[in-house]
Amino acid sequence: MHHREKYWNCAKGHTFDTARSGYVNLLPSNYKHAKNPGDNAVMMRARRKFLDAGHYAPLLQALEKAVVRCGKPGGVLIDAGCGEGYYTQGVSMALATAEKPMEIYGVDISKSAADAAAKRCPNARFAVGSVYHLPVTDRCCDVLMTIFAPYCGNEFRRILHKNGTMIMVIPGQQHLWGLKEAIYDVPYPNAVRDYALEGFELMQAEYVDSWLKLENPEDIQNLFQMTPYYYKTGREEHARLAQLQSLSTQISFEILQYRVLKS
Image (cartoon, rainbow, N blue to C red; front, top):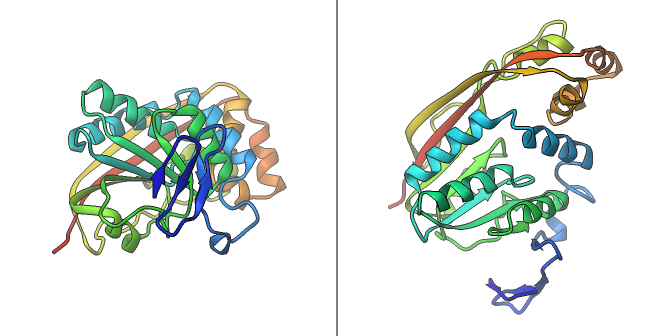
């Protein structure tokens, strides 16, 4: 795939126009599972407001340090499932400050997410695409980020260079426990996936735990609407949360750094 100012073209002669905001749509229609796949407008708007308020700053700061440690100046970083680009932008700025600038790309299946990311982080390039069929060539990537996004081992191994790094962020067992207590009669801990991943060697596991105190209903609703719980609950749980004027909850994340194993 080759990039020109207003479009991209591939070896087969296909041309893909660049949107005004800067992203390009590389998602084939036969890979769509819905008319507008990915996060909807409600979830996107809520997450953007919540993250911009700095509520997940402890995670962003730890993620920036992790990427700077393994970043290669002039290398390629891909954020698979980049959302609206909050973490992509933070990592890009941290690498530049550390004098380790990398070529940065973000891919998300949501067109509205790619559009928002391109507006937020103009020094990176964004595309609409699936993490299960990333629109990039084999072994093109030095660092892969996957943050609360679907895991696709075969595809991630395909795009990473030999000894390339994958940084995965997953929620900890007690993440948002206070929110769950507010909406569920019997809250349940998060299921944490097995660290062992085929074709990868775990190099480091870092835990980020903090407490979040939300002092107004808008922040509480933004947090609720950006989580799956909003869509897994009914009117009773929604009404229960709408009555809250403040919320205190634990936030817990795991930052896992892997090295890809290739012969």
